[in-house]
Length: 292
Ligand code: PAF
Image (cartoon, rainbow, N blue to C red; front, side, top):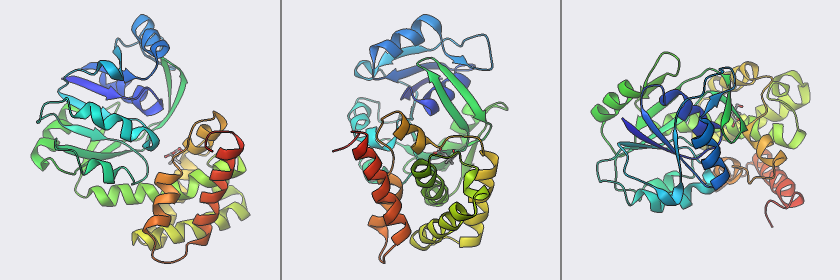
């Protein structure tokens, strides 16, 4: 299959690295230096010495693909949508973002859309080297395509080394992932700690529990179930740096609006812990000159 992956960040490179074993993969990136690195040297998984051949193009050079996987973060999603209008009406598009604010944009797309979440740990070491820091899975659910086509697609994408699964309810998978991100991401970014601290530091754990309670209230999920999930993600990724902490450290806009901001917008009552972390991340972004 000819697969187009939009975004050369950690998730985009990880997905490209595994899919290029069996497919003809093109990674669409924003800067020329990354395009050149990928085309000249190939794409490396840091644990392997042999690179994988991928094509790299700029997003402005977008071509027809059999399937497109959108891996950019929430703040860049609106810039991607015009590219999609050039695709064939039947081309399936997969969205793999944290948070839920991309749904508003996706609703306007007239191609078959499938929504997914990524539970892998990934770290971009450079323009063409990615580290797979924790084996997980990509869960996909139908949004505006159809179940049978999704099943066929997942069969083509799935492999033992890099599994894809189908789920029945896109809202549920995104909401459950959102709870994890609404707890782990802002706390680790504000306190500059790895994910494991959420459950190892008593005071952080108290804050984490309150954030989890608020997110569950807004998304109408069972608190105990989600709190158990948060704790196991924090334990399984204990040495990892969350994407939000990484974004702030590297002066990139975080997914604050799509995560805590989304919950604040959705909530019909006050959610003070979430509001506090949302404002705190904005403070850090202003302090670092990421936003004004
Ligand atoms: O955004 C992230 O970093 C990850 O989704 C998570 C779940 C917090 C684990 O590192």
